[in-house]
Length: 249
Image (cartoon, rainbow, N blue to C red; front, side):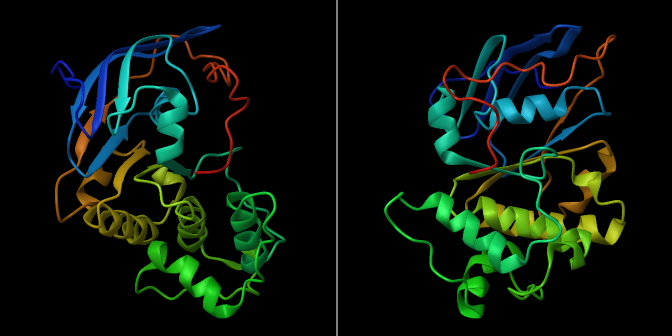
């Protein structure tokens, strides 16, 4: 946990005295952190509040007290416009029986103005949409079903969907949902590549050793401890007027 006082007006992640309490006690905090590094890794066991903290960083949840700024923005709505999310159970889950092409088309349709029809996802368009997340890795074909993808490819697809609206930062929950070490290394490599292209990354894991997967630059690490009493599910408060957390960037 950082001890620096966050200075306003900077372009990274600034957290000062951040605290959140749910109906069953403390969710997380107080936390103070100033991260200017391209990658910020939030570690902690399940129940430590790491998912709730990431949703607050993404502008999808509101702190109970304290100060939080992301990319110089402090209002949740402003943060939400600049930050994409992926890997959050119950928020950006994919439908296993749907094809990759249909999944991409639905996301593109969501991002377009209401009066514009989403284009048919051709192999060329699918390749274009998947390229930022997959880089030089083999990319799934539009006709592949989500359930046929290997776990790392499914998470990379979720990251590709989050990148559709060109966010300046990506927040990815639960890297260790990938139980295979090789899969985690593949996704970490792609996240590091995105960070090197100027997209800030915040990612959570229960395994502190995952910091070593980011081999081309040490991430800023924020280690959370589980509170004495676990909070109720969904204890974070959404921003006023924002509704429930939404599966879009």
